[in-house]
Length: 381
Image 1 (cartoon, one colour):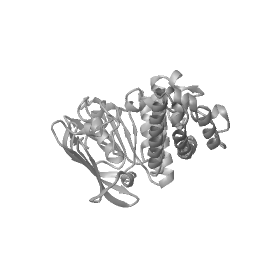
Image 2 (cartoon, helix red, strand yellow):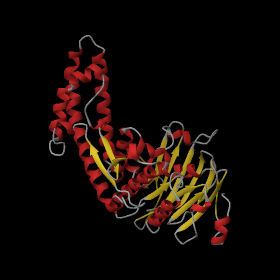
Image 3 (cartoon, one colour):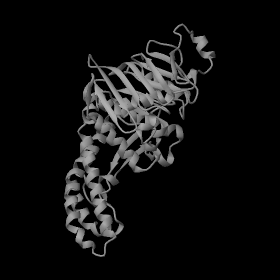
Image 4 (tube, one colour):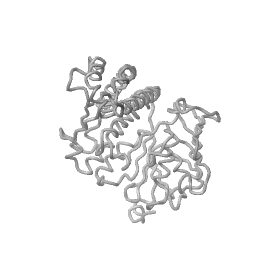
């Protein structure tokens, strides 16, 4: 899968741009605030329907404008299609070959994976970031999982509303029957969520490239909040139902749900140690890229085609040796878009590497005639 043509208008500081990326590594080079990350964000929004920089996707609309439009021609499995997204302050419209599509049917038309500093919370942050990492990965290979996840969160929201009402009531027992109804649904849907996450972590573990950057070895383990109470691999449904019964009074007391996969975590270890507490900044960024590459590999195996890789600020927290190892890994492995403010990161030109310069939201290809010696001495764009 690759983008053969990209067009966007009124997207943050990019007013109107159209360009033809190469099939391999595409470097986007420019100083800060010139539009490098915005271009990656546009591709991400086009693929996933939301932004990785802002919780409100409408924030991507240029100041003073009423809408933004991103379109692309995508080549996939020897076929071409046109995909697009139009965003206003109140709506998102998804289009495939000129026809509107609901988000559920649109997802999967363009598949991208992103490595950026904003996503470092997957490594350093709270469990919710790691759960989201897993859930987003599962959706790329099973789009129906998005509906399962939405259903789980709706059930949880309704249960929490009842628990809050019960906690504030003088007669909390009046809510018991209703809470138990929601508990039954939580067990049904939560078991599916647990099983899919567990399976996905196994698939990631099978393709992890722990030696990509040197001697570090990454290992993953899905940590269920119920594992202290029994065998979650073979008796999860029964354990879930039992713990809901045992903890019901405690849940009423605090006013929110205490049991379920919404409290699970993903353990990430680097050479056998907890990466959050013992990894350096460089090791943590390396680990995130390794996890992103693993997600891509799982997708590639499932659909026998390459997803698109987006890397923002590739030189942040990575030394020259690690960057070169990463670029060597990416060459010949599908299409990628990489941003940097440092021209020397790109290295000598090759058939697999194209360079675009960004300035004040405008994009232009670098002259193909530049020699390696000129590259070494060229200033940042």
